[in-house]
Amino acid sequence: MPDHRELYVIAESQGGYFTAAQAREAGFSGELVSYHARVGRFDRVAHGVFRLRQFPGSPNEDLFTAQLRAGPESVVSHDSALALYELSDVLPAEVHLTVPRSASRRRPGIRQHTRRIAPGEVTVWEGLRVTTVPRTLADIARSGISDDRVRQAAQEAVDRGMIGFEDLEVAATRYGGRAARIFRSYLRQQSP
Image (cartoon, rainbow, N blue to C red; front, side, top):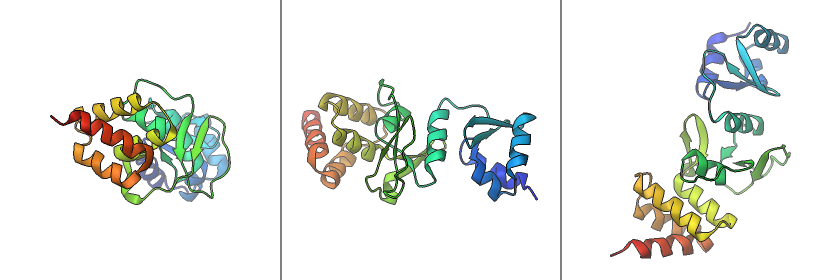
């Protein structure tokens, strides 16, 4: 028996989006999901991904779709997280997700990263699971984008109150390497 309330609760936590598998868990057969899509109750946004019609479409539909297709442990990260936080004017050509090592299946338009993410490095932003701002800055620093772009994103995050200087110092210690070098260089420039 389909449970519309259960499906609504699932979709609500994901910006109105849900997968065919989640619909099955709520008691909807494949035929019933197709029927609801045909009559306009569900919008089919990608293969196996739908949106409840009563939820407006999202400007982040590509991120919701990619995250749902990659699985419940996937996290928006790197350049996609930076764009989601509006800390960069550059729109990534692919959706960047960090996924468990076991999620090796490649998907067109999705750049999968397999670094480990601690629970404290994930937050929910506009209904999406996304790396925290310090983790995002560390990821982009480690990915090799220019030092200036990392510093600019850090400055924007500080200016908007998303992180403080202490958060960057903690991140420098935690992540080390290139991220630490860039963060500490930025922090030296900020001290009087």
